[in-house]
Every structure is written in C-alpha cells, then in structure tokens.
Length: 128
Image (cartoon, rainbow, N blue to C red; front, side):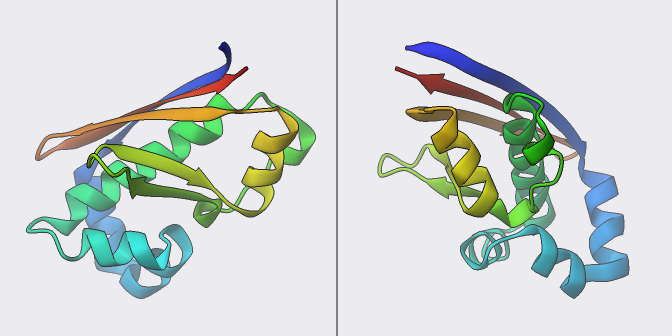
C-alpha cells in the first residue's frame, strides 16, 4: 500500500463546549451526521465525543492532497463510525467520497484519543 496522505488534528474540549452552548442545534446539525449525534449524545460526556469527531473530520480533510475541489468539503461528508471490532472508522460521503475515489484510496486508518480537555485524531489514507 502507498500513503496518499496523513492528517492530524487537536481540538480543545472547552472550545466545543462554548460552541454547543451558543449554537447547539445549528452546530450539531451542520457538523455531525445523525448516527454521530446519536452516538455522542448517548455518552456520559457528549462534548468529548463531539470534539473527537471534529478532530477526526479535520484530520481526514488534512490528509487529502490540496486541490481546488477539496477547498470546501462539508463536515458531514466525513463520518466517524465504529468498525465491527469497536475501533473507530471513517467513512466518506458526497464530495469527499468522490475525492477519495479519484485518488484511488483503498482504506483510511483512524486513531482517536481524548482527555477531559483535548481530543485528537490521526487519519492515514492508503492506496494500492
């Protein structure tokens, strides 16, 4: 496998808390898919899980080679899911999916971590 791109991102949980306090419904609708919302808000500390998903989405965006068509990709074009073994996984929809298909991405590796204060993610895109 060849590496197409690598992205990393770090999100402050307090910043996500402020965002949700100010614009909860609008922010959640714009940033998360329905499945992500269901997962995050079923957890004891939803904001930590929202922050981790935002870090993953930004890391996935950063892993894509910079081109005109990737200048704007909607947040919900990137979706954090769980693999059968429970590990985090990332799926691409819409323009992001078209971009990874054009780049011949065969798989995307996602690693998430979080503390009470920070959430981080790394995404590695691989092609045959």
